[in-house]
Image (cartoon, rainbow, N blue to C red):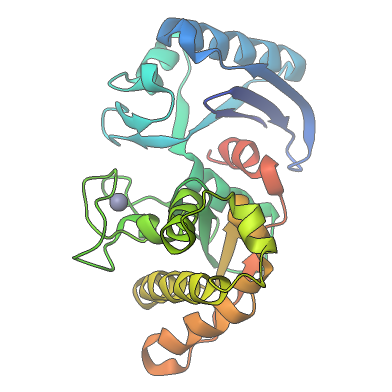
Length: 290
Ligand SMILES: [Zn+2]
């Protein structure tokens, strides 16, 4: 059985076909053109799936990953950067159009699936797959199956509050992990310290700046509080980090050390690994949802 995976992003829609050996046999990418609206995106998805299906010739299972959140029961999208999708039931509408069932998950869950089955987590039974980029999220995979929880919220460690007096988060909560260690939050903290708007990449190269030590120390503190809390609850066999911030190498030594210090009992040595599949994890994970 072939599997079709689609990664629906704000600027690109990527689609692949995975064969039964989990090898990518074809890949296609088009612009989302979200300004053209919901029906246009729906048509684009349907025609991409038709095209990928015609290549495989056999019947394929279909999985779609989106950056955003949706109500598990109804499939209605509640939050995403592709605004025209909000309030729509993408899953139902697409199923009706295709006459076939599809799976829909958020991109963090797709990332976790991909890394758990084919990436850095493949030798472990339980994987906490963390995304750190514009936002902070995660997915939980146990014995090759996604654990998304009753409402699809499992793994949302980016939106647990670690400071009741902290900044308001876009999710409505206050002092979420996301308000401290997402890319934009880290740049914002740098601005508070230096009064300079600087991109994260440049901040990371500016290690001799007098504010760098404090900035990094706060970053590692919040990273380790957030992740050790997650470990205390889930106790996964491994944590795999993806997203733009996964290239920050001090997370895997100094960061890991800080996390281990804060784990209850101080006796867990949970590995914290960089992802292996890079930007392809979303689309591969979507294909692996079924
Ligand atoms: Zn939040």
